[in-house]
Amino acid sequence: MLKILNDIEFLFPQKFELENFKNLRPDQTFSSDVTHYLNELSKQLNKDKRIKNYPDVAAFSFFCRKGNIQQLKNTFMNGKPLALGRGIVFHIAPSNVPVNFAFSLISGLLLGNSNIVRVSSKRFEQVDIIIDAIKILNKKKKHSHVSKRLAIVRYDRNSEGTSFFSSICDVRLIWGGDETIKQIRKSVLPPRSFDITFADRYSICVINADTFVNEIYPEKIAMRFYNDTYFFDQNACTSPHLVVWLGENENVKSSQSIFWKNLHDLVKSEYLFHSVFSVDKMTAFYNQAISQPGINLTDYSDNYLWRIKMDTLSNNIDIFRCNSGYFPEYHASSLEELSSIITRKYQTLSYYGISKGDLQNFIKTLTPFGIDRIVPIGRTMDFSLIWDGYNLVETLSRQIEII
Image 1 (tube, rainbow, N blue to C red):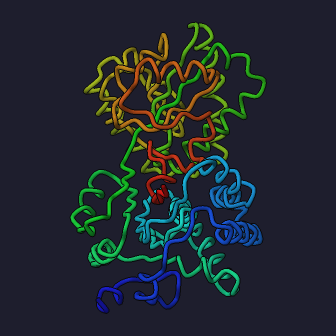
Image 2 (image 1 turned 120 degrees about the horizontal axis):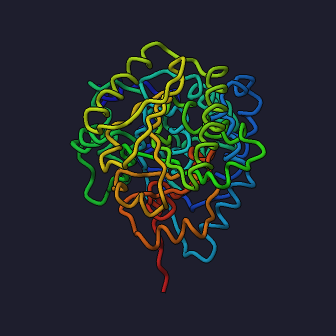
Image 3 (image 1 turned 60 degrees about the vertical axis):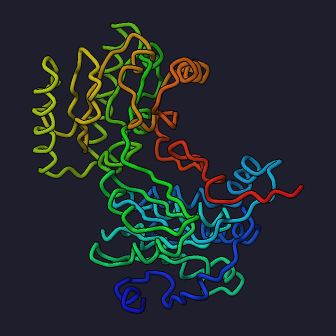
């Protein structure tokens, strides 16, 4: 056991006392101590000058505000029975979204658990900023009840850390691709423990051109779409890859011209483009063209934005995903056309110009296997305690029945 712990880098705390951590009792969900701690964490993050360079850290800080946490409590716990945390939650964070580890961590914390989080071996300043704030709060005695419930670690693939932490956890929360999940599941859990898996998913965007053609501020919509896609090089599961247009032909053509021009101008001025992205896009296009004859690449003078026009929706379109600005697009006659492609692989549908009533009818009528989140353009990365169809409030806590 000592050898295993020696192979693990503890980013927090500096000294990890295993037996004390294992013996921590579960807390009540949405406890006042945790709510106060997160509010202080938000304030501490806002004092860090580095936060101005990272909108994702700023979004995390905003999420931690007392007002937001109280609203979550009112939404999820109003009228619910007494609930406590399950015990120890072992979080395995993804390598492509730096701040994901922090959202996962505070979910476990809010729901009354002690938390061990493995962060990616990739180095991100966002991770450092958040951990630095956690270390500062740890120096304040009033936060000790919460601070002692946190452990943030980093270790390489050869370490036995995953097997060790799996052996002592009550819930294992895995963010990663299908193969990553398969490998992690080889590490055995205790009999009453279980996995929550957030596997690799595919997301799409639907735009109603009949509405967009009259948009007064199309550059704002382009900016929101940019945040959904280019901000993480289009690697996040929530990032749209397929863009579907609805509406009259002429409105679609006009809207496409306006939308893509605004996006292209923004990408050219803001995005750090690497030459390897061009090779990736070309390879992706050739692979897609072999499987889908008749697709067309919209001509651009550079490689910032690739639009792949399709006359038909292929039911395997999700395997042709690429990053850094690669967008197959299709003009659909209605939302119902999407039923032919939506599988369990589909996660987020972002939209513009479609009523919530129409979206609800779409889900109720077609009852698709996939699509767990439907959000406006610009909000695909907004974290929620309902994610990938899981209600984390229910899965990370246990209900106490009193009759």
